[in-house]
Image 1: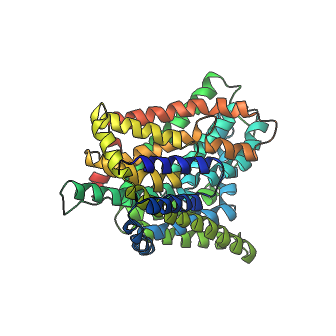
Image 2: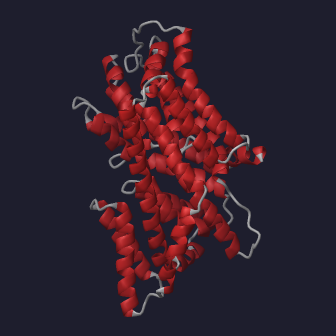
Length: 453
């Protein structure tokens, strides 16, 4: 089997997804249809599908993936309990009197929201609803306001504990073990979600620092684009009361993982319980809202795991048609060796980020290219952070970036789409700068995990 049918399968799935069909059922349905035709034509071995029950059972038994619903629940609780709204109000009043102060407040609160929710869409929508009206009313340049909110919202892709990193860490762990077995290492090393969290910390904080530097620079060079805003005074007690709860929760979750005291799954359980306690203490979680929170969390969780099952079907059928061997063959003959192969993969993932969400890319694309790249000697932590940053940049890039669509959906009609597109361009350049720095200097992602082991 030369793998050509596998490419047709991949192209068919991309086309169906662009037409708006549900991701999970598209992955499974198209794959099974191709497999059925292949079995009838004698080009597909049904034994590949016999492995599907074991794949699904392995997913059920996967301790790492239990962290996904718990982190989702934690993020939805913080969103529904208005803790983010109170925090943004306090931070805006604290920084508003300074040039660019509202923008600084949005980036800092967005960073905390990213570390709390880990969901790009939720952060962009929340920040768009809460901060965009204040920034526009305060005289901010619409492009700068829109760009700041979109860029800050995508921090949930890279700042731990991120759901994207949990899923990517699980997939890369399997890919890394497969790559080592393929080259004859029968006592393979492992890479964990915790390693990926540690690797993402420095690039994520560097990104936040550069965002802040850009906003401060704009405010000083062109004060009319980011003026200071008259705000009511805020006391130290108010700042502490708004800032301490989410900071304590994030420190507890991340600190326990980084210190090795808890696995990401255990820390996720602590985070969800802590978020529930915070909401209860603030009396912002009546039973009706709690019920809505649980239902919303269940919907997102079901979506993630249905995509995972669909991706398992696709992976088996793609492999059965010889797609994996074809990818190996292409990468071996690619000019530039590992550099050329990595560059091509990053470009493909960037383009796929226009039409696929990070979950689909993580479950569909990474299992195909990950083992091949890791067999070429790439560090799995570095590769994971590069993919996460690459997708974050893709979600910001006009005209198809997901973050732009999320903000457009909640922005007032007076904010033109062209202003949103102009506003994100400087932040895209910042992200490309961080990507280049990580490419040139891999220890930016690998030093901290090695130092804390």
